[in-house]
View 1 (cartoon, rainbow over the protein chains, first blue to last red):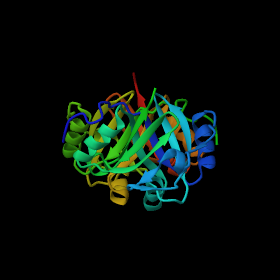
View 2 (view 1 turned 60 degrees about the vertical axis):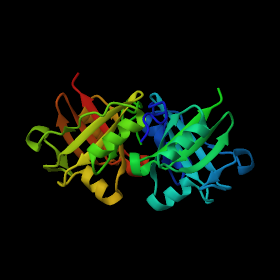
View 3 (view 1 turned 90 degrees about the vertical axis):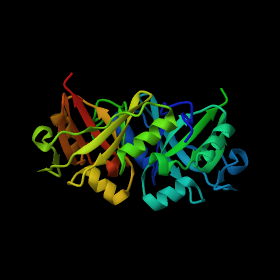
View 4 (view 1 turned 180 degrees about the horizontal axis):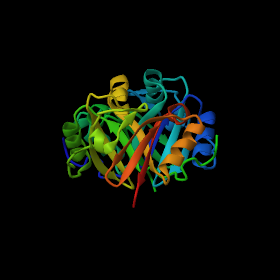
Length: 151
Length: 151
């Protein structure tokens, strides 16, 4: 394996899949004594250009973020369209889905990981940036999400 | 539910269960361009006073820690004796097991979580402190570990 594939080892997010983001956000807010954040919906496929297993998908998810120290805990409630979120939730139930890292140069990083045997599972765009879920499970025992912001 | 049960919302560790800590530590070290840490073995039951489901257990685990930003990623390879680590690994395979938070006043915090419906799953001691795994899965969709250091 090449070394230092991401150029960064700071965990930025932990993503957790849930069935009911309203309910679980409320529990988190009470448990940790924090404000319950509003969830947001990921953009539709025409804007987000979402691809799952190399095919466009209409999948969207509700996301809610809690600041837990230097990183964010992200709750994810996916819809029923094909996505890594929906597949993982159906196969494994609720629970941790990924850890995320900010990187620079998305296309090159995705290629580098692919060359090292870790496939691109899903990618998409959001206002001001883009993400890619890489199948690092065999190597790292957890999925890695790459995040790149334009600013 | 009572509010702000831990008095802290800073994630200190993410714990990931593995079958082979040597192998996975090496992969992490290369992937992130970090030094491969030596693993350490948790103390034996006479010193650690390990209890799983309210019964003493001889279970021990190999632990390896990577600094990933403000938190540690902890790899855990349990032995075959009964523990939350072994049970989770057998039932769910390799992958994330818990997120950990430093707290003050272990006995009171455990009681407070129990009063709020979250059971103590496993506890033990280490040099300079103690830990407790609480069954927060139903509420938070992930297990929470409480950590208390004397200093």
